[in-house]
Amino acid sequence: MRSELLREESCTAAKRFADASIDACYVDGNHTKDPVALDLRAWWHALRVGGFCILDDIEWDGVRRAAQDFAVQVDTELILVSTGNREKKWGLIIKGNSRVSPSRH
Image (tube, rainbow, N blue to C red; front, side):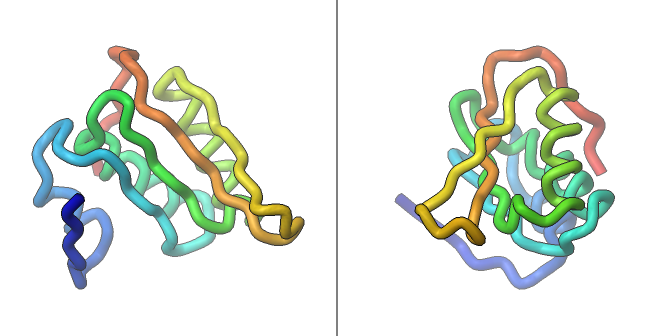
């Protein structure tokens, strides 16, 4: 497993990655709907089929609404994950074989 820390805006960093070149991405930025939606669209191209996007703070309204809308757009589902701490949850969106592809940022 290889990782790399990039110190730049999420949408800018996403452009560095080729299509289907990563297994996972972790979105933890602005907690309002539009910026979360931009992050999801920016990184989706880079995820391979079977890869997944983890969304931190899914309990925030903006994060949850963006994730729900995006999952519908790419014809998949949003999975909610919790460690038992009722206040801390994550969202998980797995990239399937759908031909649906949102426009990039």
